[in-house]
Length: 151
Image (cartoon, rainbow, N blue to C red; front, side, top):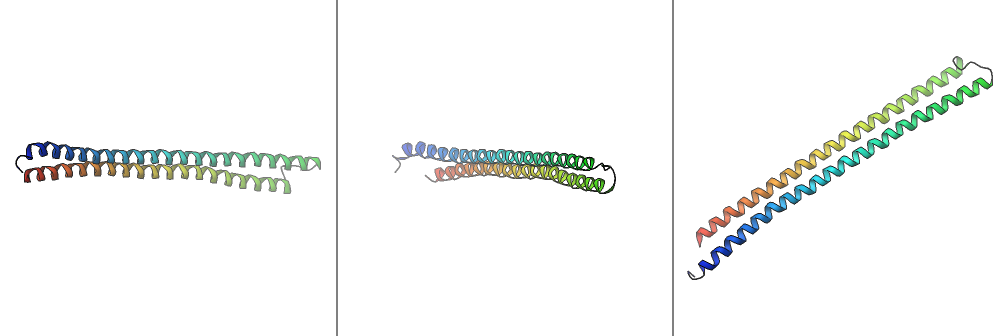
């Protein structure tokens, strides 16, 4: 057995070192995967925010079309667009349009906030994965040293 020790010792130390490096690398790779998920979450949030902002712009465009139609109709009938039922209809349309527009803007802000929160969670998970890989690597080295001392 003593004759094998000079050959086995370097091999044992090399495999222990390779195992430790592999565990540390796996932690870094898992962190990179989580970082990619964080970037995807941010991109998705931005995309949703843009869609909500477009929805708000569409609301304003529709409001302008409706107001123009109201003015055209009442003007065709020689009625004042700034009084009576025409004004009431226009005010109601503006109130609803403003409400929908602000709701779309709020939704855009919420989408970006949720994406940032999700990205933060992914980054934390990535950091934990990296640290776990490092701790596992150190444990493997410590175990290898202990076992080497037993040879």
